[in-house]
Picture 1 (spheres, rainbow, N blue to C red):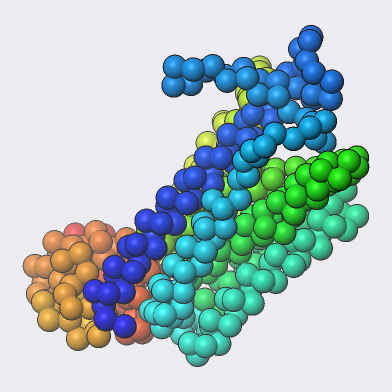
Picture 2 (cartoon, rainbow, N blue to C red):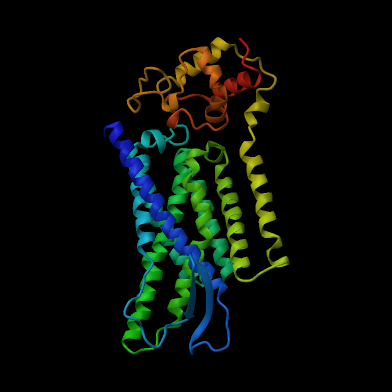
Length: 398
């Protein structure tokens, strides 16, 4: 595929993914807020569970909620489903065009597991399907009857998937697949449970039958799961921009911290929207802040720096030789890698001055983050990364 054409396809899909994702998240967060803000008041119609009054854009809105359905249906009923469907479709298309089409660069790391391109793609696709099947079975099992047990089960599922992905794919590919698996679960909840259950309720009402309340409860359970998974999934879907997350030797533990922190933040908003105050909400955000501090310290720790502390620092010529051997296939005035017509972000390492000018990028991306070279195509060794890091931290002596 032509590089420029692939870039345009990537841009269009990414923009579409953002647009549909914002629409899905916006409607999801709104309805969770609405559900939690409903209040019982005198004079409500029969069968109304609660009502909410809102003001926005110069107008007032009055919303009622029926737990099952009203006695009669209006001629026009608004459904909220296509936002979820198109968010997943555009996200999957991005996964294909970036991680599957260029699997050698973004998905496969020979130092983790020397996979063939199609082997890696099939593992990725199978994991998305398997994640949904296991999750759905848990929800329908006795575990699904307990909110606490189910939450622990979903957390364990995500952690097992993260551990497996980080031992099969590159760090970048592993993180994106954790996010893609959870995103698939969220979209499948809408497609397989929430919308079908709502259609069954409407059909029962139109037939003059009493709808099954269990259908609404099941849909509510899946909607709540989607609500708590949203913030962690958002961070994992942009994690490819932050190598300190996906490149850590124990990055699967970072996934766990992200799930906990995102869940705490979402729980704060949910509790507050439900009318909670004081002690009910005082602990969530401070706990999330502590979790974020732990995440930053854990992700930033560089064990190689301590190992090389007593070793002799390499010379500038040695550092230049490492960089030119491992990095100039892409980062040069004349890249030899077929994937690049020019140096990415204009960063070049054709001489020692250019290496020194971009030393902090090298430290972050190649030494600490280990995100570069892409897919470690030039097979930079851990020793070389450590030597470069030590040389940069020592002030880049000649």
